Length: 305
Image (spheres, one colour):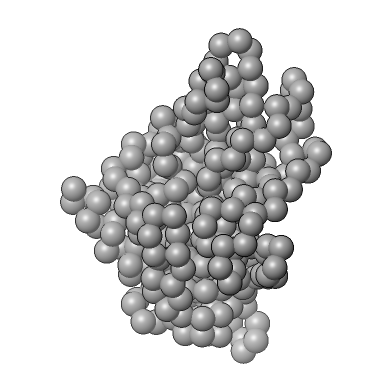
């Protein structure tokens, strides 16, 4: 992505400035047909999401305005269809993580999400594009993601691992828990993700984060790290998120709603927030995921209506 980078420095809000992924921030009006710049960050309380870039085109008057949200554009996932196979944990030597095997196990269970959002800019209406990630939840075509990924969306498109674009319907969202459930059709070739058992995750366990980082063209982005801490709580603009998994695996704009996966190819959490540096504090490699058992409880309630 080539562009003029513009950084917004948030004011400190407590010991660490948390940035919620996928919030909208107006930026300077770009020239016609500009290259997409990297996403700046903005303060949104203590919880910081990782906003990637989207361009919003004003309706009326030919006005053009920029907005920052979960990502920039719809991106197809991996170009090649990965077979779903259980990871042989015996093949993971001490200190060595077989990341390709983990990817093979979950690739077809991770989808890219792109949305359109109608916003008001002065006298003009505008449509903003944003992007995030989702997890195939079951055989009925339900997709698990963050509530902030689809907040205010007027249309939602899910792009599968094999490159199909499917129109999605929002089943329900719990903003306080930052969990949402979508539904897509057809459900052919959608592989539900394997979910880790509650309590099976420990500090120091290797993990991999997979998602639609920065809505980059091509395959999804994979990063590796460990479980840094358990049972974390952070304040958000909609309430408090509790019992979070902390990880040092890199989580970037567009990763929101994607899986944090263990060495058995099981989802242990739903990536939701990262810590951001401010004028008075420095944060590095501190990301948070909603535990999968908490996400499942919320998702089942939303599906049941």
